Length: 195
Image 1 (cartoon, rainbow, N blue to C red):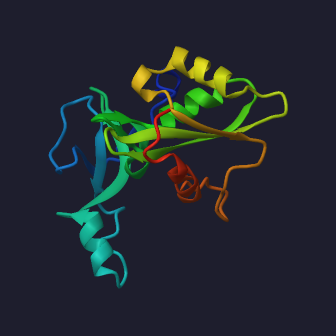
Image 2 (tube, one colour):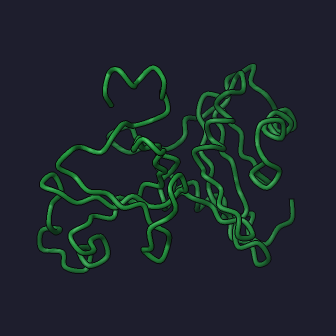
Image 3 (cartoon, rainbow, N blue to C red):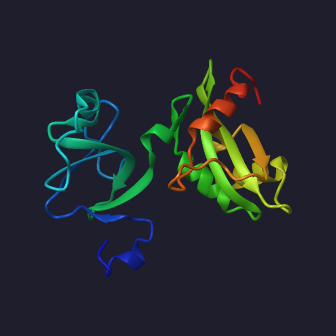
């Protein structure tokens, strides 16, 4: 991110490095229109050519020299990139794509919410629904207050249908990164249920 551009674009991660190439593609690997969201593929001297001794992972993660980053991004008309979510964390509710990061950021804006993680719940009609895990402080909001606050900030299809609120920290790996796999397992209790 050039220093001169940072104040005007606080949500951007910056421009592509000059020696790099990028594609923003849909689920079929086709480039998306300018400004639309898609998966970021990059190539250039900064990108490894393959995974060491792992041909299956290499086959899944590379195409024509591009590395499939797994990041869902968009690019504005001046070439500035914006990350919206990780592809694996995106939730598909009835054909509508929900960025888990958007739901989590909205939840984190609520007073008393300390941590947030949105995960999918399999649904036979809609494909997936949203379950929101929250770590709240002792004076934090209850489920009704969270639901109301999120309904004021998000489109109706993005508002989570299932909630898990508690005082315990959400699971993290050794590097301190939030891990969603254990939360996805807990959320399975809601499969097939109507909110």
